[in-house]
Length: 194
Image 1 (tube, one colour):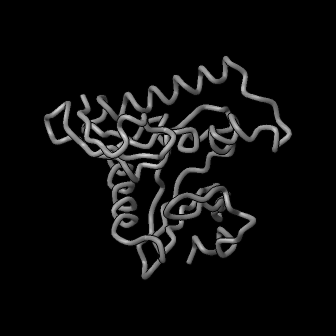
Image 2: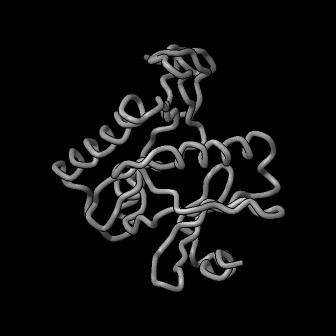
Image 3: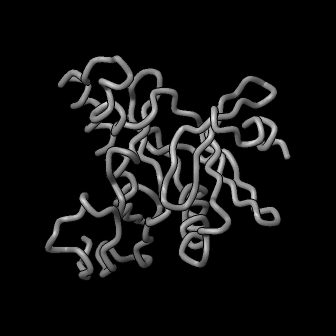
């Protein structure tokens, strides 16, 4: 009920973005904290969507890093499946790389791009080897990189993340991710991660 209220009943004016399994809305809590609420589309969820929802919760409750978006909470009530994240006011890297003309802004300077790339690399490095468990993101792309007011980057969207078997630094997994960000030779194949 609270999340419905703070997003103005999931109003279109509060939409931050849409993905394969849901829509992300901006909201503001009573104390002034801004949040992003990912609402899963109940008619599209199915087993795959529910697995991604649970995966995101499982990963983000186990990891904390300054370059990974923070999960503040979640709701699994009746048909509602909601994830609550910290709000990243500068949107996605994708918006800044590809849609900057639409916003009337300027393209990112090369120094800023390098800083963002380093932030993303640090977040991925943490997932792949510095966290207590090894996680593989499997869907890293500009629309899954969020930017704060200071233009510091955080990796988001952990629905396709795979956990490495305990004690193993390499394992085999099915390729997953977004077409266009996968090497063509890997589409539909298995590969080893080390």
